[in-house]
Image (cartoon, helix red, strand yellow):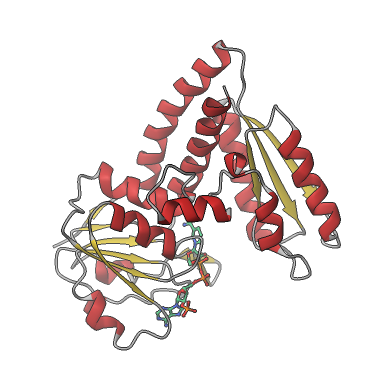
Length: 281
Ligand code: NDP
């Protein structure tokens, strides 16, 4: 069996079409959604991510204002820019590109962003509201992964979902979203004993580890939906956390890397920005 591909490019393009209409509707009412991205330092991967975000804003007619700050930026300078963007009525979303240089305190910086402008969904208030099942800004990557499952019509309620990874930006919010959708959720991590015993039970398996091709075919249940969040570079080429070629012969659905969850992350950032602008109106 060869799995059906969950194509992030196609799903993100469909979402962008809807977003264009929402941006148009806002503009007719005199409001252009605005996103500020703050990039500190010269990490090449971060620069690529930021430039992809700028391109997405341009495609959708969202005003984008990227602030490129030097690696030696101080905490005070970073916080001053966050406060400036908080106070700017033309800006509805603020994103601080992570990781920040090591001398900067990212938790402190992120907690300064107004929760309603926190389009990454990383603020304590948004993370807390998500855990309580309340209306909130949801982190873009897990939101995008859930959107892929739903768009493909993959049943979630009552299914066994296993998330590998417990980070605040992917694993934990992913587990909470699946729980909200009534899956039975197991969260695995580096201290999990006999990982494969858990993953082999998964109808929905989400890999957010950061280790190239870590999830092998013997760890996957026949007919599972496999969502690969990982982005790794091996010999200059991108690959995920899942051994795609082998796992696609066993799974029923699989996301590719590149062209999978990564595309949805950007689309969801745009969605969160447009939603923030709609709420501001
Ligand atoms: P983190 O490094 O913050 O978290 C990795 C998680 O994997 C941790 O919880 C860790 O466990 C767990 N882990 C590590 N080794 C093992 C192991 N041997 N067995 C089981 N679990 C293990 O990474 P992120 O969550 O930020 O990102 C994960 C991946 O997703 C990365 O490749 C990243 O590049 C990618 N990513 C992709 C995005 C996209 O748009 N597609 C967006 C964000 C991230 P422990 O907690 O015990 O250390």
